[in-house]
Image 1: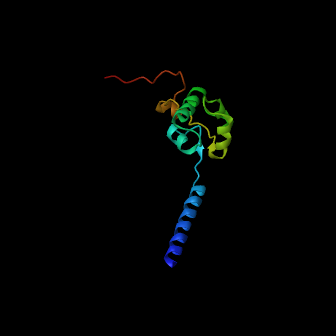
Image 2: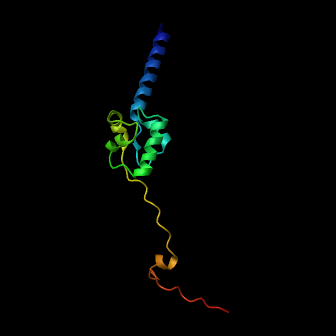
Image 3: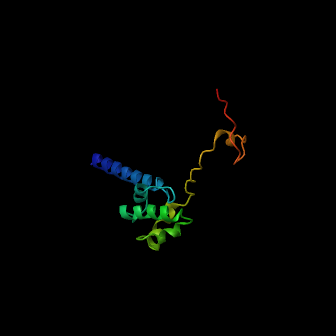
Length: 122
């Protein structure tokens, strides 16, 4: 009887740790930077096709300004947004890469549109 009681206590403790761990480790997702797999994993009620639709919408329309804008994505309604509001963050999308400047311009040497320096020939 004592071993059964100990086993039940161990199981109960394990269950509590799993539940508490899940609550503490709840993920959030930045809808402006996450890939489809991450969106699917974190958001409740968002499967593979909805996750892909979120990424495609973001690529076509630019970064989301708020979580509410997710309702503009086909297949995502306001109920889904509300259910996930605490899991959603809206950061800035990664800035577009700037074209590389020649070394002289980067150091402030040559003005834009200035003629290149002559090259000595032998």
